[in-house]
Amino acid sequence: MVAGGAGFVGSALVRELLALGCRVIVYDNFLHGSPSHVDNLGPGAVVVEGDARDRSHLYDVLRRECVQFVFNCVGDTFVPDAYDHPARFFDNNTAAAVSVLLASRDAMVKAVLYVSSTEVYGLAGNDRPIDESLPCCPVNTYAVSKVAADRACHTIHIEHGLPVVLARIFNCYGPRETHPYIVPELISQLHRGPRLRLGNVAASRDFTYVEDTARALVRLMECGPVDATPVNVGSGRAVTIAELAQHVGGLYGYERVDIELDSGRLRRRDIDCFVCDPTRLRELTGWLPRVDLYTGLRRTVDWYESNGRMWSFERRGVTIRG
Ligand SMILES: NC(=O)c1ccc[n+]([C@@H]2O[C@H](COP(=O)([O-])OP(=O)(O)OC[C@H]3O[C@@H](n4cnc5c(N)ncnc54)[C@H](O)[C@@H]3O)[C@@H](O)[C@H]2O)c1
Image 1 (cartoon, rainbow, N blue to C red):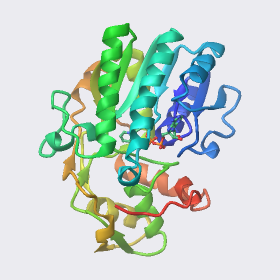
Image 2 (cartoon, rainbow, N blue to C red; image 1 turned 90 degrees about the vertical axis):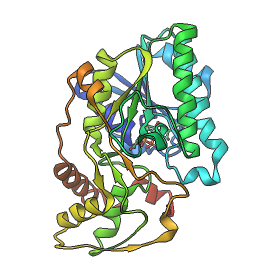
Image 3 (cartoon, rainbow, N blue to C red; image 1 turned 180 degrees about the vertical axis):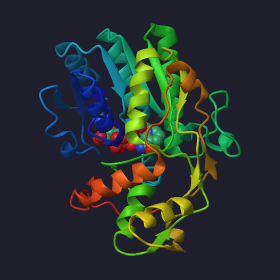
């Protein structure tokens, strides 16, 4: 099962698992995921609409479909949304994670992989590559709700013996993004011309093409630690948002892109730099990214151009802010 499988990371993971010949149950309430992300996947995929917090429904689906492995990609993930909906973030990140763990325990699945986030490191990782020994130092509601879910993975593993893999992924990008994060934002603005209005362009982030992230998650389910100790998933290279903007501008044929500060897009609290130290992931799985930044951005632009120049969040009428 891929819970949250109609979302951005989940739908890439579903495709990766289907390509490997797995039968996949997609479980999603379509809060931010889109049915169009999991259309026409062929006979190997079954899409079930349901809320991950509804433990009894989830349990029934796990038993009925004889699910052996659960990837939990459920989340409320767009950091600025939590300014308006803090309780919803604890529901969809923390309570939903606990529900998935307990339903999986009851249904006796072989293992659960929980998709956590680089954001849990917060300020601790601001000035160095982030390995798993760094403490959690979250600075926003999203990150706090993810830390709580991470700790629930650990305690439920210890107290109930459930095998849990804990993957902390860094920024992903690619087709089917579900929120106005920076790559969709750059593409949406740059297809109209070489001018951008952005927030903090000095921030640097470690971007991994979503198919590479999905492959790492599968490898971790195959051979990662099942004791809920974290494994970071990221390329190990960071770029600034300003550099990223010039890359995407180059794909649209612009020699130079002009960037104007839009203070409305600045986050209330931001981290200067997130860069992954992927040593543990490599030692455990042999994973290396296969898609470099230029190729991944090219593929993302091509997807956007051939899918009606529309991200799913634009269909939901989401307005963009920091
Ligand atoms: N995208 C990234 O760069 C990134 C980086 C770090 C961590 N993550 C983590 O990866 C996971 C997936 O993120 P994403 O970018 O694909 O986000 P997303 O919003 O595209 O996917 C989350 C999915 O969960 C579904 N969902 C939300 N609440 C639900 C509920 N109560 N019951 C059932 N389904 C529910 C949504 O409809 C959506 O399809 C999240 O846990 C997120 O914290 C993502």
